[in-house]
Amino acid sequence: MLRRVLIANRGEIALRVLRACRALGVEAVAVYSEADRDASYVELADDAVCIGPAPALQSYLDIHRVISAAEIMEVDAIHPGYGFLSENARFADIVEACGFTFIGPPGHVISQLGDKNTAREMAVAAGTPVVPGSDGLVADTAEALQVAEQVGYPVMIKATAGGGGRGMRPCANAEELPKQFAAASGEAAAAFDNGDVYIEKLVEEPHHVEIQVIADTHGSIVHLGERECSVQRRHQKLIEESPSPILTPELRERMGEAAIALCRQSGYVNAGTVEFLVDKHRDFFFMEMNARVQVEHPVTELVTGVDIVQEQLRVAAGLPLSIKQSEVDVRGAAIECRINAEDPALNFRPSPGKITKMYHPGGTGVRFDSHVYGGYTIPAHYDSMIGKLLVYAPNREEAIKAMERALDECVIRGVATTTAFCRRVLADPRFRAGNYDTSFIATMESENDNEDDADDD
Image 1 (cartoon, rainbow, N blue to C red):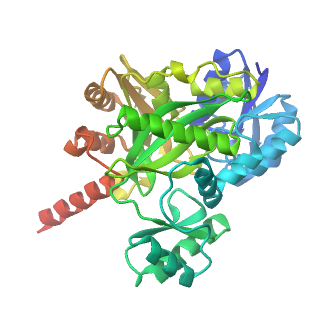
Image 2 (cartoon, rainbow, N blue to C red; image 1 turned 90 degrees about the horizontal axis):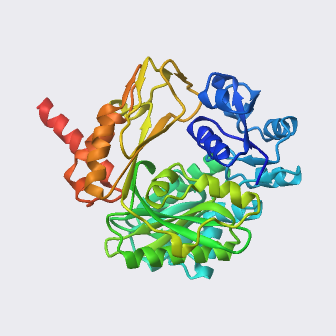
Image 3 (tube, rainbow, N blue to C red; image 1 turned 90 degrees about the vertical axis):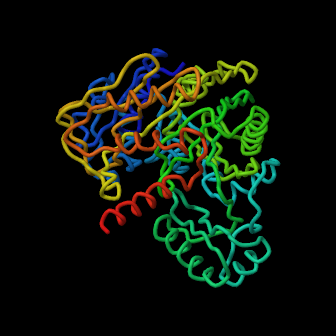
């Protein structure tokens, strides 16, 4: 097992990795910016070192500072968490070149899977279903028009280096394609310094379903079932659940096999997530692969009993996976609500500031992954996540009821939060029936706007 791990991240994921290290008897070293000096994970770590001022570019995203901290703290491995440097292939390569173990896939795998067009080509080679679309990148508007005509409208123009919905534009017809093509390419160039795009057939009424995978260095790969992630706003996930209300056991098996095939094709090692779109006919198509631990990984942990971060540490130490595919058993139902410091009434505007009062929900089957506490000041420099509220119950209906109770118990004062918004989602008949897709939140907001307009009349 590893001896000493540096956690190259902050917030709730830093605390999550720290706890996994403690469970395995591994020392955990935290890094922090000046804005995070009073963070709980800093106090709980075996050692901690400041790596710079508040701006992420001068601290958490500064590779040289992170590596220097690893050298000073004499660690033997670095866990990148999610976000920041977690999918930075150069960082992974530098970590290994400096004599540390990178707790994640190899740099060349991150690079290949991080390019959506290359990842799509890998999926095709692995026999994983993909959405019909262009054969590689599309050079210009003229080629885009030709591809779209062959595929059939509506289409989706997607940046090969995109993420978080940036560089993606739906297009309903040939008249609007030139404008949408330019918009997608321009946004991608500004956000990722890469304006290359490709085109896919637009999947209508899609569900966003992802498969959790873990691969060791001994050739073993397992999948841990799926997470339904269709409750999202502008491509940002808000609520996740497992199992998905639309998957059958047969479909789960086929999607799991497709995810494992992609892992073998790419030479994947450690934990990752293969993301799919599932249409109304229950046909599924590869979307992308996230080469890191996901924000929502605890949903899978609750229904499988597998500690994914501990498995990451074991794999990085060269040990085999502690579980075989035949031993994976998805039981019960789990739901996760992301509690963010955002104001839904003001278009989800971030709400940094001091938490004046906080009460963590509890009880049987309730888990709250959070690094904040009463009196903590949420910095304005980073993402707005306060924590992840999770519940586990024998079935979906009971899980929804448990989450409603937990949300009612969750008291956070001093900043605006998404708690009440999550409560609204759970109360919606479409969610309760499992009858929702990725357009669900947009539809809810549109209905609410129409009600407000009617009230004004």
